[in-house]
Image (cartoon, rainbow over all chains, first blue to last red; front, side, top):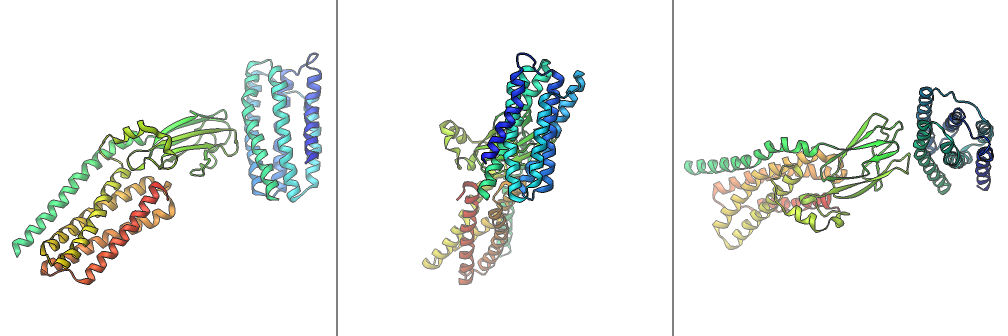
Length: 178
Length: 282
């Protein structure tokens, strides 16, 4: 559990650190913001697919299915908007770091099974959504230049908040069930 | 004797016609009047919100959730009284609310999405759990008489007659035997005939209620109530015919008849307690 907290902190620092550090000098551009959102969506979908494969807990599977369905819908809406605005998502230091961290998490999850897997997955989802919410409110929303892109990310915030609360419930119920 | 029989048949016919006349305007009125009443109150689910957040409906009213968001949501009562299951984007789900009170609900996959329904009681349904906040204005409103048009209004009215007539018939016969009064036996005969005439309507109104809103009635209770109620109709008609043949022979009712009538009274008491439990809770 302590590890998870640390991982969450590190994830947050990794995501926010470069963005915050360069806030004055170099805020992410709109294509980079679209890239970050796309990457975050993709990461959560991939981890959910892994959870569907490895977990046998019905609550975990239900949560994972919801993540796939919600983030796929979100991804599509972001892609549609980017296309409409003529923005091509671009990689950035932040998106690369997100990917690297996700690869590590994925590796860790693959080595686990049963209850340990479920608990790690739930804890990661709590930390991940918290990180993404923090990134959205402190960087992505204020830095987005296009008004539609800005409001689209603002619109996604309640969804992420919902996922965070659902993930916390899942984490809690896995803990009390063990 | 022949004349007597004709008169009796005439009275029967008159009684039946009276009830049909009483009921048919209700049925005629019910069709157009119920329609706007039962038109669902719509809650739009959009951008991770239930809109409007607070909705008030009458008991028996329907609420429909339309999902205009890009995500799948649910409408799940906090107290477990309803759960839509997943409502996919572009689809909707509705439910009918049978109990007065306030129901907070949420979206299961997105616990931050919350909203609430206020179900206002009308007639017999008022004052159930959670409706305590309804205050005096609500009580004043429910005192105003409006013609009963919904099955949940008609059934409780008819139940009064069914519930009163059978015990009266039984009591009159018992008293008639004790005091050896033919007039009491005559009263008992007529009372059971009335009971046998009105009870099919009571049961019909009950079935109407059950078929229109039954999904939200407590499953176990309603199953016993509906079949015991249906059986009661036949028991009443049977008792009525039995009593009629006794009356024709001009003798006091037999002990066997009285025992059967007593059993029917007890069944009716149990039936009434089930009905009460469904409307008011235990």
